[in-house]
Amino acid sequence: MKHINFSLALLIIGIFIFPNFTYANQNNDFKIVSEKVKYYKTIIYKENNLYYSLNNTNSDTIEVSQQEYDNASLQSKISRSNYSDIVETNYKKMTTTISSNGSYYRYKVVLNWKNIPSTRSYDIIGIGFLGSVKVKSSLNFTQEYCTSVSNCTTSNTNYPQVFSSGAGTTFKLPSGTLTSLKQTLYFDVEKNTTNTIVMQDAYGDYSHATSSISLTNAKKYTMLPSVGISLNSNISSYYDTIDYARAHWEGSW
View 1 (cartoon, rainbow, N blue to C red):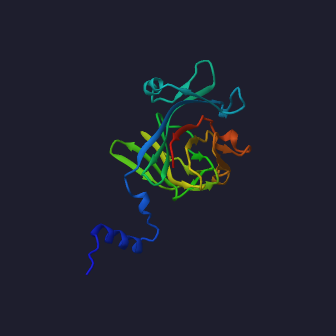
View 2: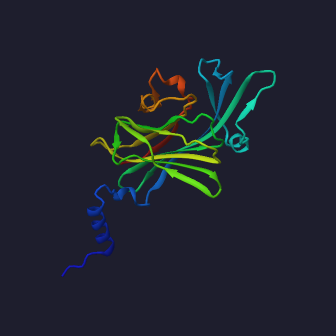
View 3: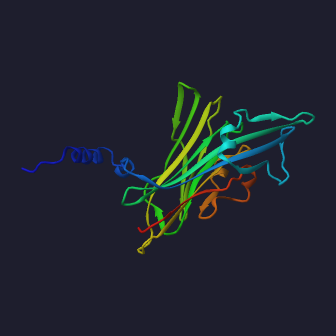
């Protein structure tokens, strides 16, 4: 009589009970092989309940140092004296990683908010990639937020889209008073070619809605290498614009 390994037996049972269960997404043997971290400051202008900016959008974003990000105030809104406007400054940290388990690769982007934005509509997070790979697994999204140290929530509600050169998802920011806010998206990729892959790029990107927008319109985007999130022209004015964080890998696969 043959003896079956206990762990293997549990795995087989699990597959029959949970047919949508993906074992590859459950293991923890992925190791980061490339990482890129960027810090951003977005300034949103609002006068008499109307947004304005010199570049005809309602916000300006620049990349800043880790030191400025770490030292930034948690207070985001500032009313300027002698003006009838409010300037809101939001700091964000974005981390893009490429990880490997020896067989295939995982692309991940994480967005951490230094301070909480006042506009809570439908935001977009995604990763663009090269044509030599394609999405292997389902997209995994989590949004974590806290209203106090002891009251935190994790939400998985999102509206994913997979493209030939990337994948992303749209989601609603939580309402109410928050003390922390973080979004994470990751998925596994496999080869989309029979040739040896010697380079990989993961272009992590995030678009924050600085004006209220419907879910239908918020899904009007695509993901591209060397671009990240590419918004349709009719919704671009609703979002801030940050430069992507590219994780770059070289090797042989």
